[in-house]
Amino acid sequence: MRQHQSCIRVLAPFCVLAIFLLLTLTASYKPVVVIHGLFDSPSDFQLLLEFINETHPGTNVTVVDLFDRTESLKPLWVQVEGFRQAIYPIMQNAVDGVHLICYSQGGLICRALIATTPDHNVDTFISLSSPQMGQYGDTKYLKWLFPDHMKSNLYRLCYTHMGQDLSICNYWNDPHHRDLYLNNSNFLALLNDERLHPNASAWKRNLLRIRKLVLIGGPDDGVIMPWESSLFAFYDDNETVRDMTSQPVYLLDTFGLKTLHARDDIVFYTMPGVSHTNWHSNRTVYDTCIAKWLT
Ligand SMILES: *[C@@H]1O[C@H](CO)[C@@H](O)[C@H](O)[C@H]1NC(C)=O
Ligand SMILES: *[C@@H]1O[C@H](CO)[C@@H](O)[C@H](O)[C@H]1NC(C)=O
Ligand SMILES: *[C@@H]1O[C@H](CO)[C@@H](O)[C@H](O)[C@H]1NC(C)=O
Ligand SMILES: *[C@@H]1O[C@H](CO)[C@@H](O)[C@H](O)[C@H]1NC(C)=O
Ligand SMILES: *[C@@H]1O[C@H](CO)[C@@H](O)[C@H](O)[C@H]1NC(C)=O
Ligand SMILES: *[C@@H]1O[C@H](CO)[C@@H](O)[C@H](O)[C@H]1NC(C)=O
Image (cartoon, rainbow, N blue to C red; front, top):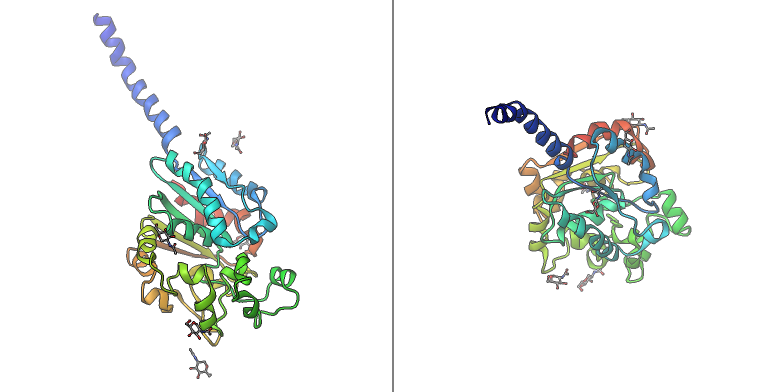
């Protein structure tokens, strides 16, 4: 009996240590969900998976394999619905919540998904060079898609019923045709609550349930135009970039941006020297802007 008790006394610290190790190894990192951008597919994220495996071993990372390549041109609300069905079960399995890493166009999909999912449990939403305030610029993607259009006349196509069937037109934001944008954009103008709609206050409440919003962008991106759109800044009607805090949607706090900022829950990273397709594969970007949030 005596021997038994001393044995327990000797073993107890080891048990505590073993339980501690078990808990930290299995339950420490929240699952991570990655949403790709225009024309990408999950295979583009191999390096990111290796980075996460190295710095946060054991993290359950899902790169959602939906709307790959040209399928990513489908209307964004259709994609939001598809991604929701894939991500919802992951959220339900994650008692402490999940982190989202959303790249380029995927950042708008994630914002819409969060805003329209009342019982989401997104902890940190990482927006990786994503045109959060829209896009207005001639890029190689645009030239490939619309060889006969320049940025100055793309509004004629984008701000129509037919145009809104293309993802890129869903966030086309022509500063010289605000009225047409407000009347016809059926994605970004709604998500920003620039065109009034009945669910706006619910969407705002849902977005505000995240813990942190991490915005990453940089001047050498080359695709997102203006690149500051990744930090919620955008052109005024003279194509001068105005920062986030000067945007009407911020000042009026239409969808929660000002509240998040006042809560000190927006983190901004401006990273030079990164072109658009390198964001998810750049180790410096990962170490500086992403790793610390994947707890
Ligand atoms: C994670 O890293 C370990 C150690 O380097 C390696 O053995 C394992 O295959 C990696 N797993 C994944 C999914 O990359
Ligand atoms: C990772 O998460 C998914 C979705 O919740 C789950 O189906 C899968 O079993 C998990 N994998 C591991 C290794 O825990
Ligand atoms: C926008 O819609 C309003 C109301 O339907 C209409 O009066 C206005 O002319 C429209 N503006 C443009 C530029 O289409
Ligand atoms: C608003 O919410 C209701 C109820 O959840 C839903 O049926 C409706 O489709 C939503 N409207 C929009 C524009 O999302
Ligand atoms: C745009 O430029 C014109 C002419 O330089 C000026 O009158 C106008 O105030 C400017 N608008 C804004 C929003 O800065
Ligand atoms: C990676 O990111 C760093 C920091 O922004 C930048 O200086 C560097 O040029 C980038 N490298 C590549 C290959 O994108």
